Image (cartoon, rainbow, N blue to C red; front, top):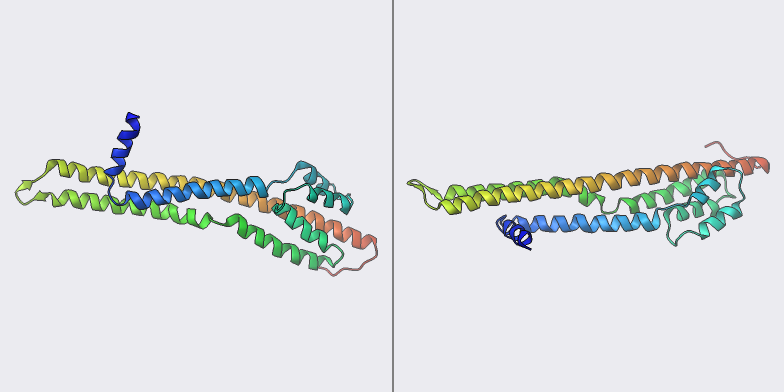
Length: 217
């Protein structure tokens, strides 16, 4: 309890810049929770479906059953369903529809990450503004005749250090979260592209086997 009170008093010494920095910290937390929920609920794929697609030799009804076992709105399910619905069309048409759906999914996965990227830059700058304000307050208390208020000077220096520290901590947190979800985004899209290629190849095999001539993409 004493540690909490001490930390609260230290934050109060940080000056006005603590409030916008506090807002940025809350945004980092909200985006982290939101992206974690999205990836956990909508960007997961069972090993059963993964192994099914990788075999090449599967019936489309098996894929339909696999898609049906996924949660509503699952990004992989949406992507596979587009390919499944258009599998009787030429392969170039299927690739186009799948690419459009992949772009929509990529946009959904990237939602909010630009805010984190902005916070990485903005938080240290706000901390720097707090530092400047604190140092200006310290210099103001130094008159021509010397130090007018030594305690006030100490408070101004404390304000400068606290604002800078908080800004850097928030920027680091935003940077780690941004890089982590950027990695998950890249990994998810690479897997989706690879599996989409497998399904397109399956369609080409079906068309060749049925004597359907398709255009070269």
